[in-house]
Length: 350
Image (cartoon, rainbow, N blue to C red; front, side, top):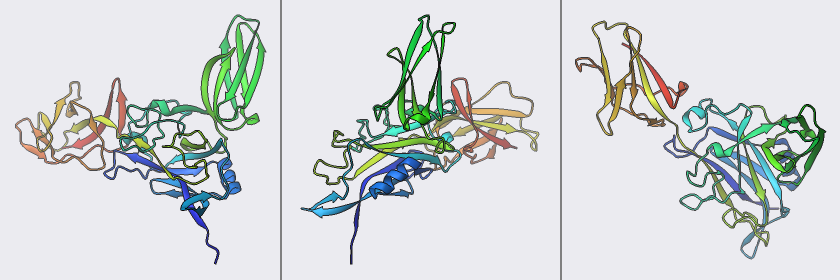
């Protein structure tokens, strides 16, 4: 019988403080089309898991080490699309609600950012250790346009691809001090790129295959480079495999909880109060300017959205008579940003 042994080069796990488990099953990892062809060529297998996924290779055991069958070449890149399985994921996560539609989240293992337990993170922020605006890149397909103003007779522009040294160049003559650059991205590989005009950096993008961009939340790229730090390196110099467990950590969103109480059945109520007295107290204040028969009561501070519900938030009338002993927590689809505050609205009828 022929036995084939597989071992994980690496796995990627999504963490999230919204969930009691600390892990998120809301995201799906899918190899890009180019990556899937690369995996087939190299004889590698990607297996998606509940909280992320892992990439496996064939190995032989030599001197108690698991040695890869086909050693990876320096610079090999594995690209995985991130798809959302939960439509309210961005609501429950501390993410930018007003980022441009074409901007996506991008992660790779070319950072040096260890968790408190020394696990290799794929996020850019070395202070918070969580996903942030620092992980956002514009994703562009087919062509990149850029308008540059200058009084010079001509100007040179270069689109430099960071991970493979490809360069697209363009020289334009002055047209009323305007230079309209346009680069055909189909003439180059996908990946990160930077635009330079006369040597000055003007923009950073991720060039993505148009077949991959639909419904994409982001991208994870894992590189094999022989100079990766030990904490991120999965193929050693002797071609033995040291499986790495990469993490991408999301934080749960904090919002002001705003109860909008409409008086329909109990006409004796002239005022309401909301408070949580059991456990850790939560203070609420009644807002001004509500229409007749409506009371708007919001928490004084931002509260975290969590999988485990907060109990004991009670609604009383102007005489402290109990109306509702346990008010519901916010629905996850009603998130509003108003000025500097983000609100979760909860509608109550009494």
